[in-house]
Each structure stands twice: as C-alpha cells, then as structure tokens.
Amino acid sequence: MARKVIGVIGGTGAQGGGVVNALLARGDFTVRVASRNPASDAARALAARGVELVKADLLDPESLVPALAGAHGAFVVTNFWDPSQGARETEIGAKAVRAARAAGVEHLIWSTLPDVARVSGGRYNVAHFTGKARVDDVVRSAGFSRHTFVQAPFYFQNFLSSMAPQPLPSGRRGWAVPMNPALRVIHAGDPADVGRAAAAAFGAGDRLPDGSVLAVSGGACSWDDFAGTLNALGHRVEAAQVPAEVYDGFYPGAREIREMFEYFAEHTYFGPQHEAHIAAANALVPGGFTTFADWARVQLRP
Image 1 (cartoon, rainbow, N blue to C red):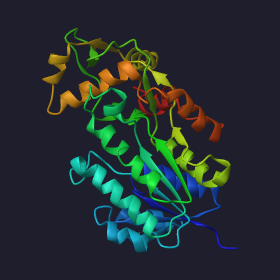
Image 2: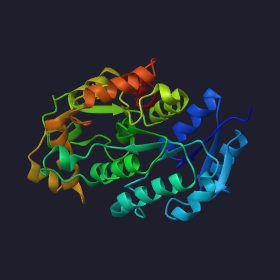
Image 3: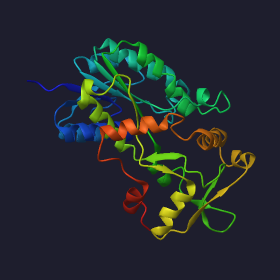
Image 4: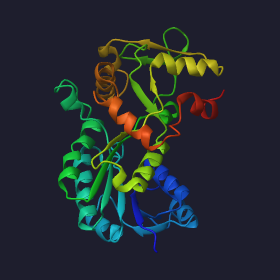
C-alpha cells in the first residue's frame, strides 16, 4: 500500500524544515516539499533524503494546486518577516489554504498565532500575530475533512539574532525590555519542535479532535529566567525594564514589538487559553519539547 503524501509549504524554513525532519523520522508518510527553486542547495539536500520536490511558490497560489494534488495532508506556514509577505500575510495565507482545499487535501495544518487584537480588545496592534490569526476562520470554513492549528513559540533562536544581548546603561549586557522582566509569561521554544507536533497530528488522524489547537512550548519563561540560564553557563547578562516611550525609539518597528511584550505581560504569549492548548500539544508529543536550558547549553555556551 502506497504511503500517504504530506505536502509541506516552506519546507526549507525553520518550522517547515522541522515538519520535514519529523515526518522523515516517522517514516510512514511520503514527504513532498513545494519549493520556489527545486535546484537550490537546500532543496537538493532534501531530495537526497528522499523528499519529493515540486516547483511552486506561496506567492503564486495557482502553483500550489498541482503541487499539492494527491496529497493527504498539507502543512502551511507564512512568514511575516519576509518583505514579500509582511502586510499581505493574511491574504497570502488564505489563498494558500484555499489552494490546498482545491487540490483535494484532506488534513490541513495551519501554523498560526493568537489574535492579539481580539484578545486585547483592540488595545494592542501586533500584526505578525493577528495577521496569521485572521486566516483561522478561512481554515475552519474551507471544508477540509480535518484541520489542525499549531501555534509556534517565541523562538529561542531570537537570541542569536534580533534579540541578542546588547550593551545596557549599567555597563553590563542584556536586554532593555518594556515589561516587568520577572513575569513568567513568554512561551518559548525551538521552532523545529513545531514539526514534531505537526507530524504527530498527521499520524494521529481522527484520534485527534478536529480543529485542535496545539501550542508548542518548551516552557513559560521570564526575561530574568533567560538571564539566569545564560549566567549559569558563564555569561554575564541581565534584563532591565524601560518605559514604553524609550523602547519605541530604539529601532524602526520597535513600537509593534513593545506592544507585543505588553500583550505578553497582560495575556501571556499564547493568550488566555494557553493551558489547554499547551496541554493538547504535550499530550500528542509525550516526550515534551526542548527547554531553553537544553537549547542554550548547546547553542549559547561561551
């Protein structure tokens, strides 16, 4: 009997790559990746591992229909931080979902985040959360036999890039943040773990309630927790709270990130239903997910 095909949109990215790895590790599905450039080094490396490659582009939804034709399942993720997506993320995600439905996909997994505008009653504008959340209703109404939502955590990898420790007025290094650094409200994790949850959801089939929300988290952390973990490894960092108006002047786009942190402080990263959604993911992946301490010991040792 031929193995069912799972199509992955974004299979060379952080989340999609994790889905590919987890599906290959299971060994009970055929993995197909839609790639803008199947001749790229990253795509060819996937082909060498037995992945089917098809030429398709998230920005060209018509190309996704033949790419997903015959697939039992599809994992779809968009990237707000890609300049070609950004403000169009809701539109692009909705069109990709509809393309998957037109292709005959039975089980769709959509990578989403909480609707900050709704949760906060309109107080906070965090486009890179809410833009994804606005696709959720499209998923629900599309008519898939099954659909599942995964919610990705605050990436540990942020500490290697946009949120690497910086000089502070105290003379030490760390993070100036517009929130109480002691609040344990940031659900953080490795985006590769999204793949473990998604692969488990595809494998579970109808044993997983339709419409489940799987929030992938390696633990709820505070900025003080991040600092304490790194200091135990030999770093010397700290977190300091700064006023909102000061943070807004740090860099272009800082206001949205400041409002994101204020949303965390009031509602947590995954929002008011975080306990149920995290429990659903943990039940599906009994081994749990990567903790910040485990990740940092490998990635951030001085």
